[in-house]
Image 1 (tube, rainbow, N blue to C red):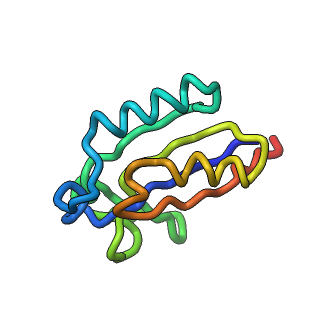
Image 2: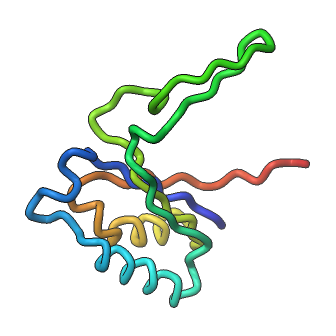
Length: 114
């Protein structure tokens, strides 16, 4: 089953806390998950200031700068993994280096019925 591990952190603190992971550590962890055969995709995101939110209401599109919600933590990146079950996915997520200074939301991926 596919699981999406959404990595959240406070952008302003992400690289300044004592437990903050360096890019090399994050890459090494992603490589280890890939070597295990569980990695489907993983990417870090640009800062939230580069984001835009799109809404369609009544056939009209509006675009606003930034993320949809104001929060203390921002979406920093993701891992799309294959795991036997939620427990295995949680183990993978718990070892993501950024989990030490932020959080990782784990959600099963729902297949669209096309």
